[in-house]
Length: 90
Length: 387
Image (tube, rainbow over all chains, first blue to last red; front, side, top):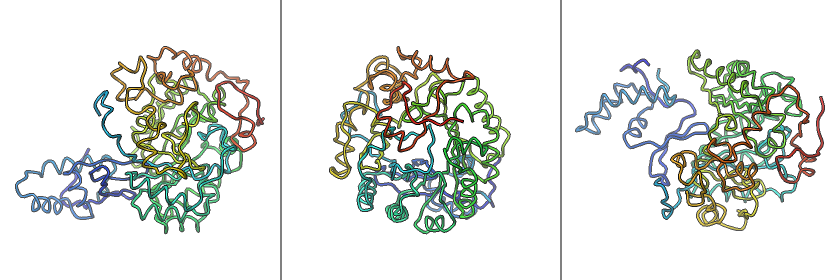
């Protein structure tokens, strides 16, 4: 599968919704007849998928977590999320 | 979850299936509704449903299916959707599409509905209308176009049975033409009406293989825009389905007349009492009722399930199927090749797909429901349809 380029605008796919679920103590991604329970880092990335570019998203995360070496992980996760159909990448 | 670890608090329900009504303009002979629905008491009213929605949400339910029968027949559907939306549910409408016009789609959208699943009985009009028991194919196509025009994600659902399973490529083509985002190709599960009609509905092993090949071929060749879910036929697969993800673990069904069930077929089971949401808080029903605890965890299991390494994956399969085919709901699901009673399923498969079946389809309608009080594997007398 192809990589998500820096300038690509990333957003949740139509019909997808991210929300905090107290009963599961987790963020979940909701979509037609389905649900994924997210770990904390996945939720932090998906929260920022609001139409900004991948580069801007990574910069924002790095500012929030200055001690973490997260760029490679984020790029890989974006590809997985896109291939799962969770994201619209323009 | 750890094996044998039953002292822990059960997990909360995540899915609520609200079967709003058993009225339906269609009469599909594979319907999963209870065969004796015509004998049930009055439907929950608006206020009672609103309480159910609030209580289930407070427990943790977040995916919500409005189903039936045909949920569009409830004039208060928009009221229920609006409250569900406000509560934070992801709302799915599971419908035949009949009587869905542009104005109604707009009202559903305004209420906050998230998604619509439309059923088709076949990819061609003649067979679709014959199985639905009414002319509906063109209305369904029109409904699909309205759903897409309103910007909804759309799931098209085809239940697969002997007379349509050879048309998987045509189903996928129709779904593409209508702009579906997901297609569900669901092999018939033999409960309720489908069990009454099993001999007439079950495809041959060869047909099943061909359908799987066609599905995989489509997946390999398509651009992936339209996702295809294929629900495997447990009868042919030799593996039981992980029914309701484990009894009382995830799914909560509330029926039109207010019974709370761990699965929508649970009323088939004998010797159990079914809690009523009008009389008991849902929290108490979910955590404390004998029904929801009856097959929770693993302690209820007999051999071969009890010592089986697969038990945490398939939970021993389907309790209703175990009862209907072996007479004991605590037996292993006979769809499992490890079940000592697997022959019940093997024989049904071996006889399937013979060119002539003497069985006539029993359509799902009020009249037949009044005649056929309880589902049993043996075919019985009822109003039938003849071509």
